[in-house]
Amino acid sequence: MVDASLMTNPGGRDNNEDYVTTAKYGDAECFILCDGLGGHECGEVASSTVAETIAKMFEEEGDSADFLPNAFNIAQEKLLELQASKGMASAMKTTLVVLIVTKDTMKWAHIGDSRLYHIFDGNTKYERTRDHSMVQVLCDMGEIEEADMRHHEERNKLLRVMGTEWTGKSFDVSAVLERGETHSFALMTDGFWEYVMEDEMLKLLGETSSAKEWMDAMAALVLERADMTKTDNFSCICVKVD
Image (cartoon, rainbow, N blue to C red; front, side, top):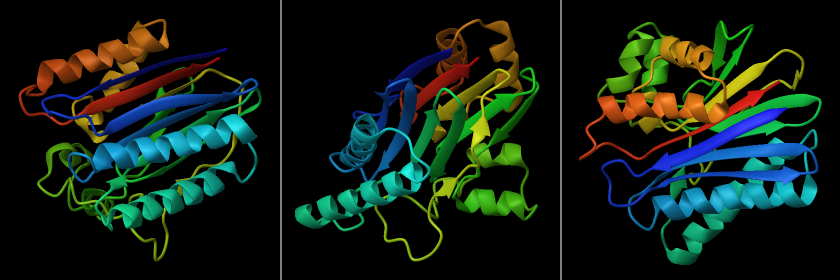
């Protein structure tokens, strides 16, 4: 069984540059989360364009061994073409996280600093995607602690996103996992994960019985801790796979 719930909130901003959606092909499901960059009429266009391009591809083609690389590359090409047509080269950009769950497997890919958390082993262990950001580099070098990434002054400096020319490595793709034990996933924009600690994610997952309850419990922490007069957009997709 796949239980999923999605939410997005503009926070303290006038417009919401985040975008979340899902797509289905038979019994396979695709979950997509983006955080647009570039300001009004740029970020939200980038995020919706990329997300809907991939959703449409999945609904028409379903999953394949090369779906994620193909989807990222095609969405990137479409976004660059849109930039060129509007005379906004590099102005429309977005992060991207995609999770695919089929009847037998699970896999994901990402670019930017929107995250996917994978929780497993009886909800006691987790892994997360590595941010393509300056603060992730500083953390990997041991210059700052992981907890310091959330509010570091360099946290908004991204090294890789959709909508900039890729000259080297771009998106990261996970290994393919077989379904078996219970797995849970949380896809989050930085406006969400900045306010929810990993131990809290695990604790709240254990205390709730559905994807929506888990998501709502974490969102409550964001609402409690963030200044809602100026905080960034915040979005999340929670998925429980049994």
